[in-house]
Length: 247
Ligand code: BGC
Image: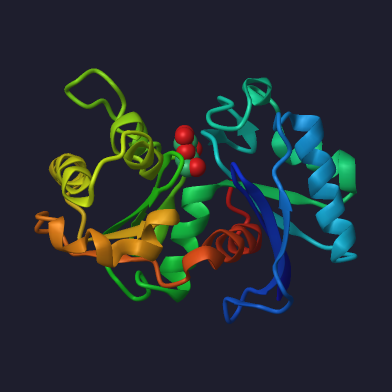
């Protein structure tokens, strides 16, 4: 079954048709720069350009980088404040005529990995952690997603959320070397281990591509691996969310 998968990120909005049985893209990825400011109207216009690019009339799955509940955005997060309380699925349907399933971007990446990547056939608790501009999370028990978790928003003892302490963007902004950043990641993974007892942690987002630079710093006893579907994870997982009607 082919579905259009779209991944909305802070710098780019990417889409491709996905064969949801194999997890493979059946077209080239098409990327449009995320408009600044990334208001609902501006982003909806880009979504409609993507749908037209693929001349697509069917279902669309769309990964979205904010807290969500049943297709409604709960906070603009790193996108734009005006997204708060917008029903993203209805907005995109109005703009394009297509039926949309909106899924949190980290849940989407996790769905790709659980079905076709590092989490395939792994029983027990698997956590996807995306390290990029923010920190996103997706948690799975025996392959089933518990949607809309926000484990990047857990508080660190300094009184700030972990996203503001441990995201890859913080490493760049504070010019942390990999050993300093590794120490912060160790605090974070120790915290996740304590509260969730995961069997596997999969790292996604920008950091998954450079895991060889910090893997040796990690001390957590839980196995930690890089996402295998890499920068296609968001698109593949978004299409899967539409296939499984997740929202
Ligand atoms: C948002 C999450 C999102 C993550 C990665 C965080 O700021 O709260 O919903 O998954 O960024 O984009």
